[in-house]
Image 1 (cartoon, helix red, strand yellow):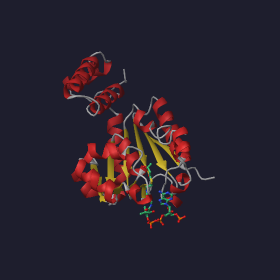
Image 2: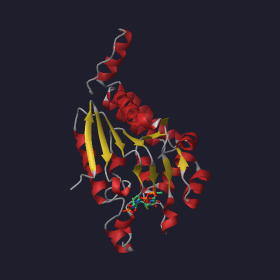
Image 3: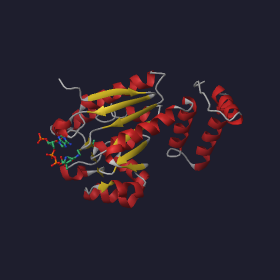
Image 4: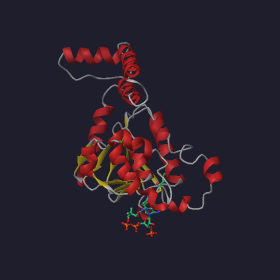
Length: 257
Ligand code: CAA
């Protein structure tokens, strides 16, 4: 049987590939559980400092698998806690997760990319929330994360008309961090991930937590959270090493302590 989720380790980076080419990487339980298991393994591996989630050249993921969902009734969706039960493992990852998106990122695919800490897009990427066309609404965070990322006007446009947004518009709107020529997407994303993984992991995790706090709190509460983490960083051996290395004009060697 084909493995629908593949993993590789590149230096200090864990790479997760969605691998259902026959269905444009549509997300079913096997895929979502496979991604969750890969994140569990990379989080537990102390040699990994950053995770990259990608698909194929043609599709990051064309959404939740419509065949898998089409006969759900309300009680099944509710009792099995559809989406919340397993999709949100990406959200709870403490190490940074970068989505490397080429081709279609639609519906649950776009939402899964948005659960990651940032999106690097190939110039072929197409983002969309076309659920309205099949009689449902975005259900994996699209109605909430999209307005936060690109504002209400464009979020409404995408969710209500089902139109797709290309990579250039997605970058201009703030949905993606970088647009990269398709042939270099993985190489460039892995390079950025290696840079992150070369820093102090506890500091990287504190930065991720602090930025995410900005979406959950008032400015003053967020600033207080940041300041506490900032003060705590002075307890790290990596802070002593980082500042000593700067003073001695050498590269810092972080030990994640
Ligand atoms: N679920 C199941 N199968 C899918 C799929 C999906 N979301 N998206 C594509 N596929 C399958 C197609 O059925 C097709 O399979 P067959 O060859 O067996 O017929 C195969 O992938 C290739 O797709 P197409 O022939 O349609 O390829 P295309 O290039 O002509 O079109 C596309 C590409 C525009 C992405 C089109 O496939 C499409 O519109 N897909 C559905 C997109 C969608 O509606 N996504 C949202 C799903 S709902 C959701 O995600 C809910 C949520 O919020 C969690």
